[in-house]
Image (cartoon, rainbow over all chains, first blue to last red; front, side, top):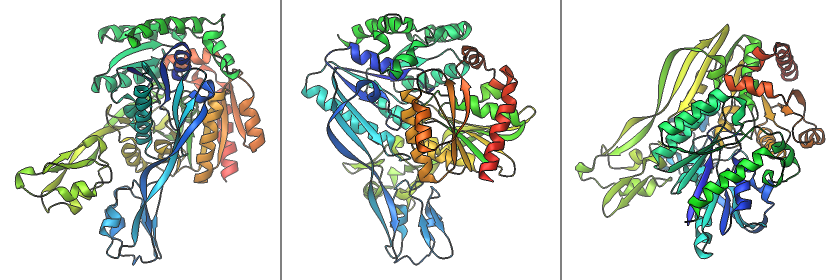
Length: 289
Length: 278
């Protein structure tokens, strides 16, 4: 069984458009959405939820009436989550990382750490394959941990059902959810665009995949909006032995089809859709061996 | 006044808007809080005067002391310290740098060192934009350590524009939570709407006033406009879909440089926000 994660660095380059197309074209596979705080894959796959679980991410400190306001907890909290006014100690649950230092130093045991539900994760059926996805509560922490949970769930099901591939839609950026979505995968596909931002973020994403020693592919979306920049990306790929799977042209049919919840690969007039199918044909030989 | 520019969905035009507003204002402070993928410098082209390293504290364990580190492993809420066969094992990628292991561990046998997680660059973009940009080292997960450090440099006296990372989790919250107003940039597609809805929930929870800018207006459908009118959310500006704006963006040309009218339109946006937040 092979796993591939689609990332980008810069947001909005087309990760979900590609991931959903691949998921429709693939067989014997599982779909996974690791962009847990701004998930979009479900919009294309319309999952039918079979099972949902609460995500208990971390703990949050709570202070009780026994507090004597000695101020020790505030002094030692490294996340500025505790404020000590004249009248009370207050804990900011959005800043609290749940480390437990405050509870440890409290001389009267007035602080407790309580597990907090920070989201949900789901196992669903779709018309193409099983899907594993999640919803982090708005503003919550621990997205990396939630990604790790759904990765475990997908791998379990893949083994039980003898699946051949897991196709993972990743998050933008290069931080904890992205790193968690790359942990132990066979391949990464970086989707970029020929803009100065796209190039910079592509290189950063590549540094991360290189850091974790993951075989990396690339493709350039909206490749024809700036030929010079496309050339810079192409050169960077060949200098670093990143296999470039294709260049997708700018195509206003992409958002139009999206608005009708139609797959771009099913639009016979879409140039972008045609190219995405070609990219899949290269990729599938690497996934199914 | 602090105005943050956020989105939920990535690539909707946060940087386009944030940079456009800063250029329209000419004199302001600009902070790029998208430290995982900072891009504003390609447009504002600041001359960087100073680059500061940002580090976090990380423990190291003096094993040669023969001390018993089992309490550190029991205490660590992030499982960054383990105790296996009488030996302490440390997983730096899980460490939050809370200092708990030093507090509970054998006295003097757990020490701390500074580990670099990124940088903050400071400079000036003409004519008078005081520019700051955070930059996370690839492989590090301490996005908010850099953002928290940047908070110390916010100069509340003038207008402050903050470019937020995408998403709706902790890096976005850390960015917007100090602001007096948040501009949410979205695109009129089901993806844009879905992520806008979550961002709106976050801002309501944080009790921060906000308004919407629709970018690439004309692609997709009416879903965002319908949502805004149902929820009584103000659409403060619309940027039309124009491949020439996208081409200009790709070269590092800002929308204000590309079409002069955007200077006045963004000043109008700021005026409206000032009126609303009083």
